[in-house]
Structure formats: structure tokens, C-alpha cells
Amino acid sequence: MNSARVLADALTLTRALSGAVLVWLGWALGAAALPWALATLVFAWTTDILDGALARRDPNPRQTWVGEQDLLFDVWVAVGVSGYLAFAGYISPLAAGAYLICAGLVAAYLRSKAFAKVVQAVPYAMLVLIGLLDAPLFGLLALAWIVLAITITWPRFPREQVPEFLAEVRDLLRNQRRTP
Image (cartoon, rainbow, N blue to C red; front, side):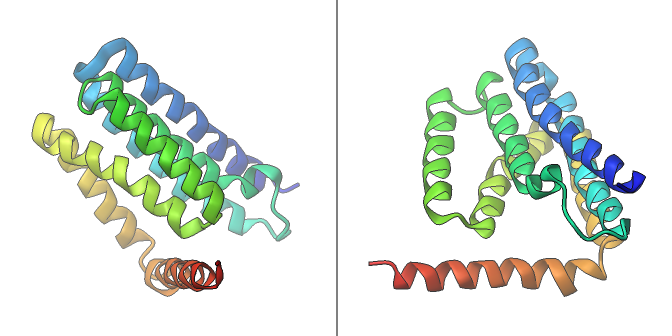
């Protein structure tokens, strides 16, 4: 196996750790850890960009088990963000739990990458918005990171990622129309 693929898998696995760190930050430090929670989220997003770039450098196109679970690790970070928000008192634990259970059930039923990506976006957006209000410097840094990431990945973003997402949504809608 190529060392780039091994490093890509290691970066992907750190996202699982990031999700756990986010929950711990909310539980142990609460709202005072908001800057750390935003930094952890930006770190997770960075590993997500880097692991994909490294994996594509491997001449062997076969995915590893870790690579096949990439979206699951991404969703786990969103679960971590939800846990942080609940433990830190930004949202009620009941609302966080209900959101995660409903999203999990619908995701299991739909088996849709597009739905999983939308599920991730909600807690991410909440954390960034709360950051803009309660820790403006860190909220702005998270927004700046998003703009920078889109800029850096620009040729790939509009040509591959946006059409892929739209195709997933289209397939999801077509499949739902066929389901009795």
C-alpha cells in the first residue's frame, strides 16, 4: 500500500477522535470551550480535505476499509458537534438527541450520501453561527477557512463535488418516487 494512502487513512481516523474530543469539550468545559470546539471542527475539516487529496495520489484506485467509511467519519464529527452543543448548553440535549435519532433513522432508510451531507451541515452551521455570536474571532476564522477551502479546491469543487451532490439528490428523489 502506498504511504500516501496510509497517511490518508490516518487522517480519516483522526476525525473519529475529533468527534469524541468535541463531545468531551462540551461535557468537561461547556460553553467556555467554544473556541476549542471551533478549532477542533476546522481541524476535522482540514483532515477531510487532506485525506481525499492524499488518497487520490495513490496509483492503486482500490479503497481501503477506512476510505470506504469516510462519510461515516464525517457524520461522526457532526454527531460530536451536536454533543458539544448539547453539553455546552447551546441546544437542549433532548433536541440534539431527537435530531440525531431522526437523522439516523432517515439515513438508514434512505441510504443517501446527499442526505448524510445535509445532516452534517446543520450542526456545523449552528456551531459556526454560535461562534460568530459568542466567539467572533473564532467564528470568523471558521468562515475564512470555509472560503479558503473552497478557493483551494475550486477547480474540483464546481466540476466534481457540486454535480456529485446534485446527482445524489436527484437519485434520492427518483428512488423515493418509486417507493410505495
